[in-house]
Image 1 (cartoon, helix red, strand yellow):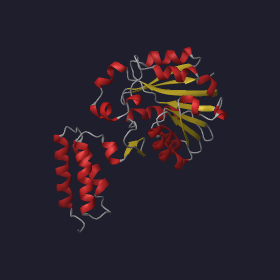
Image 2 (cartoon, rainbow, N blue to C red):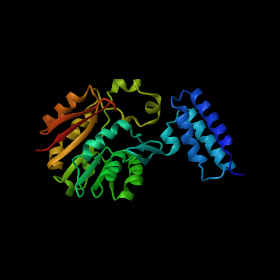
Image 3 (spheres, rainbow, N blue to C red):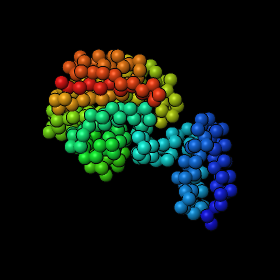
Image 4 (cartoon, helix red, strand yellow):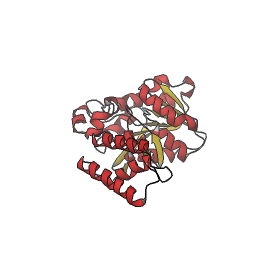
Length: 274
């Protein structure tokens, strides 16, 4: 088949947008453009194969599969992060955590991304601060697989295991920047999450226990042993949980402060080792 004309492309995109809108997609036009670009980009000829592939992608999205899973990537901090079934999709609000961590990180620093998921935070930091010594870890083997896809090309090392237990011992007392986007949704609130998160993302990446802060407590408890003098731990939290999160860090012997972006509806607690 020949390259479709502009009218053909526009007709296809309009039809996809209509179907997505009927399925309840709020940003139907934007999503239609992304799906079309993925399958029928300006450099690719229209073929039966890619038209069928587009139809499969639209059907997935209409059924409720997160757009990022359908595309195979998520845009985070201006970078395409590879994602797929079974891994947490990075949120734009987490870019505040990246910004805060990057502000104190320099080339050559030892940086660790705990609960790394797809490795999006570590990848963004490597993009903002070239030359860091990057290590990441996650307990979920599916997340570790995606993190390796994203981080190994930039020199990152990814380990599978529970928090600090899987980190190389030579990092103990050397970490200058420790980032950890722990699950922080209270268990009782999981049912209130959008279906895309609740039905498709792993529960362990969302559920933070009764008050949402169980994993943060565990991260804070051992942070002093792993942070270098003057090193800083950054965790994402909610605006309502910021006070308790900061108190957890102070109880662990760290100097904590809250960073808030009203525009991005994002909250980060930084906790520095003296």
